[in-house]
Length: 157
Image 1 (cartoon, rainbow, N blue to C red):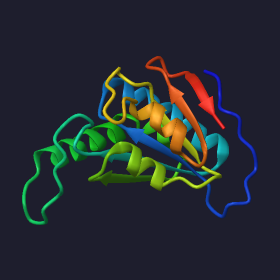
Image 2 (tube, helix red, strand yellow; image 1 turned 120 degrees about the vertical axis):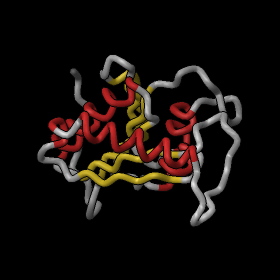
Image 3 (tube, rainbow, N blue to C red; image 1 turned 180 degrees about the vertical axis):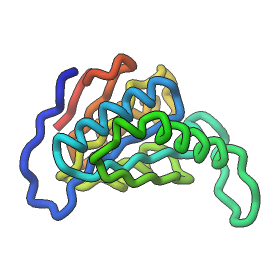
Image 4 (cartoon, one colour; image 1 turned 60 degrees about the vertical axis):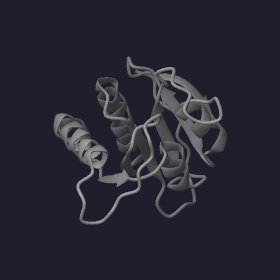
């Protein structure tokens, strides 16, 4: 599997930030991102967002059950369980955000980070663009869009 280019960065704590969508292919993308974090000796931040793009956006109400949030947490816990061995030797931080994926991912990136997202499933939830397309346009760092097969499809600088 090809590796994304890495370069030294003066940032105190460069990270690999991954948008995890709960899909089966998302697990393969997580494995690829973990390998990148290991190769770069940096933290992997796995971000799951709710509700899914295209669903009615609902803000979290403290103390009330939220089915979309519960689903995002369960999906993320399952992904971390099945990729436990892939993440050995990598510091992993998980985040469940009540936000549109583009907003949540771009806001977590600094210029020295690497943002990893899976290839779009064809949905265009915002401004006629898919999450991977918007992240590629808006992120302040390099973005790698990973195909289902787990290899980099395209990267932006």
